[in-house]
Structures are given as C-alpha cells and as structure tokens.
Length: 296
Image 1 (cartoon, rainbow, N blue to C red):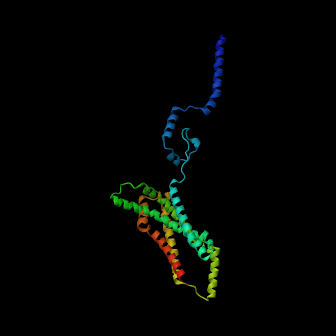
Image 2: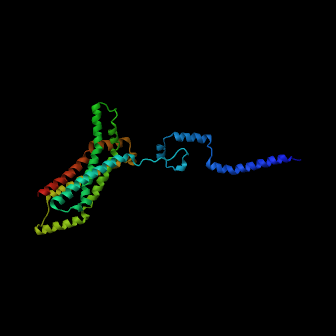
C-alpha cells in the first residue's frame, strides 16, 4: 500500500508533540500540579479546622500539611506565665527584706560583715516564706468562690473573670510552692557542710572550754529543734502527696471517688489545714527559739 507523504508528516509531527509533552510534564508536576477533586475537598476541610488542637495532638512536620496550612508559633507554657511572675515578685520582695534585715542592718549599725549569708542563709529564709505565700494563694480562691456563691444564693452563677483565672492556675501555684519547699529542704541539709558553720562550731567549743562547761545540753533548745524539724518534714510530706496527686499522669489513673478523696477531702478536711498550720508552727518555733536565744 502506498501512503501519502502528507500522512507521514502528520504522524511525525504528532510523535514529536507527544515526546515534548512527556518531557515537560514531570517538571510541571513538581511545581504546578493541579489538585484533584478529592484533594481539594480534604484541603478545604483541614483549612476550616482549628489548627491548634490539631497540632497539639499529633507530632507532624511542616511538609506533611497541605499548602494552605502552615505551622503557627505555639505559645510556651501559657498557664505558667502568671504563677511564675507571682513567684518572681514574692522572691524579690522577700530577698530584699531579708537582705536589708540580716545583712545591711548589722553592717550599718554594728559594722558587722555578714555578706557571706547571702548564698545560703538569706536564700533559705526567702524560699519557705515564698512557698507558704504561694500555698496560701492556692487555698484562698476556693474560699472566696464559696463566699461568693453563698452571697449570691446559688452555685450555678459564673465567677468573675479574675477569680476564674486565679482558680485556673491553682495547680501551677501549688507545684511551684512544692518546688520551693524541696529547695528549702535541700538548703537546710547543706548547713553542716558550710565552712562558716565549721568555724562557728570550733568557736563554740572553744568558748565552752574557756567557760569550763562540761555539759552544754539545753533542754528547751533540744525540744524546739526536734519539733522544728518534725513539723518541717510533716509539711513537706503532705505537700508532696498533694502535688503528686495533682499531676495529670497520676490523676488520670484515679477514678472519680479516689480523686475526690485525695483532692477534695484531703485538701479541705484533713490535709489542707495541717500543711499550712504545720509550716506556720514550724516557723513559729524557729522564731521563738531565736527570740529566747537573743534574750539569754
């Protein structure tokens, strides 16, 4: 059979156009690929979703999202901003007051150099004061909320915004109070390791020899220190129990009755008041002993 030359030219031209489109198509798909109908529906659905809960549930990389969704900068510990600021303010106030009273006042009035107390002694007075203050801020909003409900005569009315925000950060305040209490315990255990304490111990022994005292036992001081340490350990143990039960990993393993027993019954009826009361009495015994020592 004979073919017309014009037919062969058309076939050749069609073949060349197919090769050119085959060579260009992959490069176009890498940059400008048109989405299909199903992909467009999925992309529109993901775009309409709130990205924050979606991003918080699954660890995804940026290339795993559609083009219209971009990773946004997530806030860093938003519920800890206010508790950390309050802790910093209380620490600063307590440190300035203790520094002026225990270091600057003896230096100005008696020319006594007590600046060595700043790293351990001054900080160890600041930590328990701030811890007790944060612990009081944990319990105070609950009492205010109860009084507000009694005043309104109903428990279904909404709280003010400031009270609701305050009650929302009680767990963070309690954990910070527990952290400061643990640091206070560690600082207290480091007292015998200080070089200044060893020098003072040698001076006390030398003074006892000079005064020819065979026995330096003081019954009041012994009882005061025993009760002082016992109440401190008791307060720290109760605070540790409440703090551990407030962690989400522990709280999720408890049923409602167990959670209510630990958090409500222990907080309000049994463990709530012994914790601040024991720490309060603990400091009261310490201050009373110091006053008696100064009088003697």
